[in-house]
Length: 219
Length: 240
Image 1 (cartoon, each protein chain N blue to C red):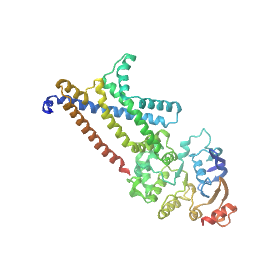
Image 2: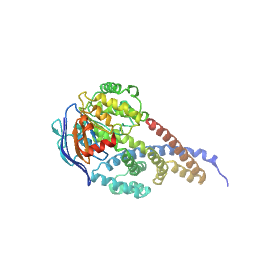
Image 3: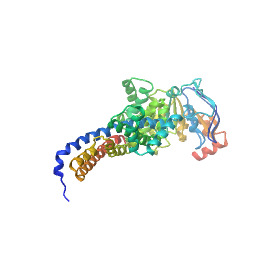
Image 4: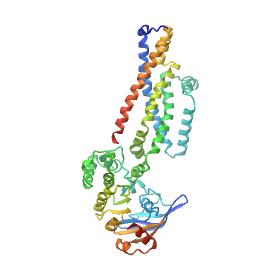
């Protein structure tokens, strides 16, 4: 068995371009997921029944169907229904954002519920209105509890982002596939892609550890 | 200042308060004592509406706060509360804890709020802890900050819900001293406590609760020397 890594050199820019696409994708879908997930989490603890039901059904659907199916639905099925089309990258960010919001909202809801009852009472006793209490007192503490879960979610997003190669986004995996098509060699480009994913996940993990230390400075 | 009229409070099937009436005058210090589960804390928590009485009325400065027309937040701004477990906001420094409500709720200027906060911290002997997080403080220090935080809203009424019950014995004194320094400065105080000697010393009046009923409402001298009810006598025998 012979491996031709040297031959890969000239095609590497294809994969490297994919890195920025993957990172951009992960960043935007994490942000979208976090923002929308926050809204859903606050809805879930709001005690406004119709909204609560909406958030629950939403979460159930997005957790109960495969991500790839959701991606296909957004990218292929939505244009058929609405008449306008979106780019594959937009569709990917939208789908992953909507999907991770479901998971993030559950983690955040758990975090909010776990904040000590006394914190609510202290805020209420000071005359703090509900919305301010949630945003300034309860939510920051909830966030701290669930930070590890949020980091795991963004690492999961980074890895699952390889699914977007299926609808033609030229991310890292798609880059590797393109090299495979040109060179008829599968192992070398794919193992390079895997290595890059691994390094990215490690960097993200390291940043996450730092972030967590910074957040825990008040302990 | 505070007038409680025949309030009842039920949690599910459990009736915790069974028709309590009580009046507290401006500037008065009232000690509320009684066995665990007698409804002391619930009574206190009804006064700032952390609990809504099932029936009955509570007047603060002649306004019925149990009425649905009353702005609860407005009522609470005027009533400080100190909790057994301090309930400082752990993600904020002592100073941030102190100025949060004055700035965000009362809309004071930050500089002004910080100046007042420093004065209050000095009053409880903790001005050097302004930039610490609550996690770095001892229990006694936390409770002193919590008291100062309540005072920062300049309330006319202060409620203390077993403020020393969660403290190590050696820290009880410093907190009691702070509370004592507030008594008879014009602020109206209601204090739920198990510290009998302290209640006797600072309170103008003792209210003894048992099984949701107000059994005694009298001066400390009379309560501790010759309680009227059998229940109170029995309680005091165990406590003293």
